[in-house]
Amino acid sequence: MSFLPSVIRAEYRGDYRIHVTFNDNSENTIDFRRWLDGPVFEPLKDPGYFRRFFLDGGTVAWPNGADIAPETLYETTTRERRHGSALKSGVVRRTKRRAPASQRQAK
Image 1 (tube, rainbow, N blue to C red):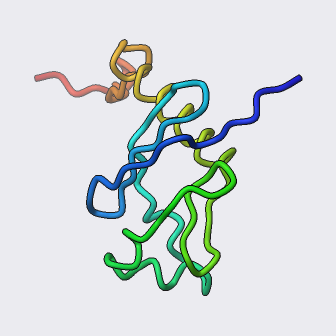
Image 2: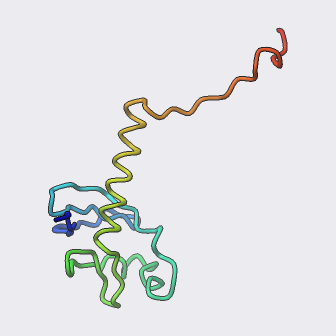
């Protein structure tokens, strides 16, 4: 049987960000701006309306019927955790590629 994520707690953190806790106790502050396109999500662009979210069926929802699937929120959390921890541990590094020695100019 596979894990079915469910949001058990949600707290507004400002600027379209909501801190969510899942039923496995993992948590993350998610920026919801990435999902504010399309007619159903248009009302959520109003900060006052956005703050009217509530939990329904294990996910974050709004009075107009807009919601984000809990699996999507959980995947976002685990993906951000993987990428964040990789950057912190030095596994992923941004480096400049050096030109081959034959192409470098002598100083």
